Each structure stands twice: as structure tokens, then as C-alpha cells.
Image (cartoon, rainbow, N blue to C red; front, side, top):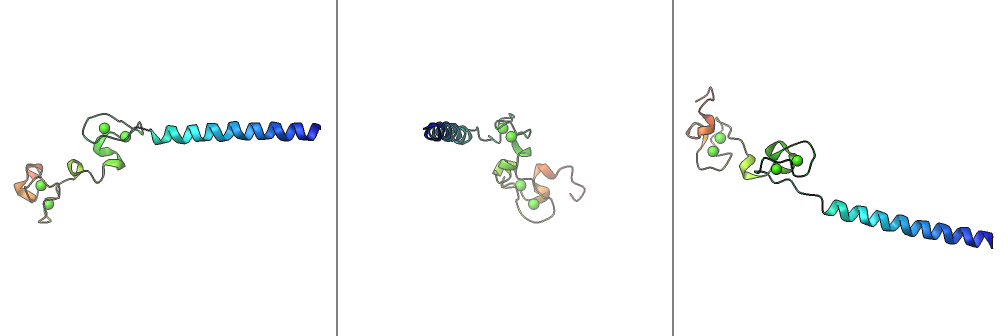
Length: 91
Ligand SMILES: [Ca+2]
Ligand SMILES: [Ca+2]
Ligand SMILES: [Ca+2]
Ligand SMILES: [Ca+2]
């Protein structure tokens, strides 16, 4: 009888554990996502906007490379035509 009681206790503990685990997963699902142009570290990982890996593929976080013939940051200006390259030595 004592064994049955402890089995029931363990079952209850497992249920509580399962419940708190699912709560934790829910929390993670609602973790804020980095917004890449608001100047705030939205997801609180220490990196703000374009510093955050989450923003690597964001168009506004692309950096113009001034000597590759490609409009890297998609602003319609390529290489030295781009104001991002005004201070680049190759322009
Ligand atoms: Ca942000
Ligand atoms: Ca962040
Ligand atoms: Ca370029
Ligand atoms: Ca550009």
C-alpha cells in the first residue's frame, strides 16, 4: 500500500513537471522577436537591431560593399553611387 501511494505521488509530481514544462515551452513561443529597425533590443539577447543575428537577412541590415558591382543593400545605388560608400577609400 505504501508503494502504491508513492507511485501515485510520483505520478502527480510527473504531471506537475509536465505541466510546468509545457508552460515553459509556451513562454518560449511568446518570446519577443527582434524588430530590426526600432533601436530596441526586443528579444533581450544583448544585440540591438542589425547587431542581432536575427536581423542578418533583413534588407535594412545589408551593408553596401563598395567594390563588388552589386547593390548589396538594395537601395538602388550600386557601389560608389551609394552614399554608404562616400567615405570608402575605393570611391
Ligand atoms: Ca530591435
Ligand atoms: Ca536582440
Ligand atoms: Ca556593392
Ligand atoms: Ca546600395
